Length: 221
Image 1 (cartoon, rainbow, N blue to C red):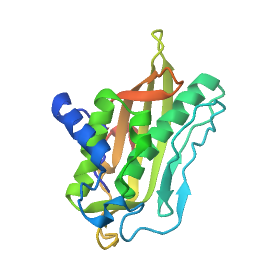
Image 2 (cartoon, one colour; image 1 turned 135 degrees about the vertical axis):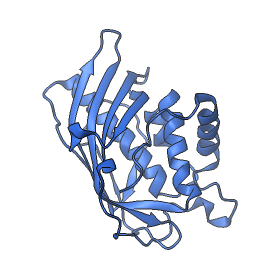
Image 3 (cartoon, rainbow, N blue to C red; image 1 turned 90 degrees about the vertical axis):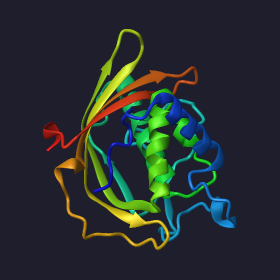
């Protein structure tokens, strides 16, 4: 029940990268008020929880902490797979999803996890999507399910992750009042299929470089 085209690449790369840089440097809120450095959006639950991937990482990478409010729940199905490399890819894909949601619902000056797990086209389109929430003074609340997740490892060292998203249990939320609109009805567009490409950085992080999405995907219903 929230726009799920967040990781598509319909925006031109140059324009989106400009938006991404501005977003990452100045904070998502884009406000000059004294409240621009708040750690949480108005009306959000005061107790924030750290969102850890369902497949804990056994590496030694120093990762930025991701915290989501208690009214946000992301459910990732299909892990562990039994393959250590695929599990690592899925874990960083989960972190990437959580980093985008954190940037949307937590009004902070910086969101380091966003560019830690995304780069290139994927970072640009994510930043554009995030900014759209702030431009419209809205956020979201509820549970999102991620399922039918599959990892394909390529010979060039990259990986592809495909998965379905069910957003029928999420609701739009007013940023200023913190009030959720639960009158919004679920629709076929709440079921989205994603196809993402990831590359492993020199630090050992699987960063998403590009993503395509299909709304109202029959394979996800």
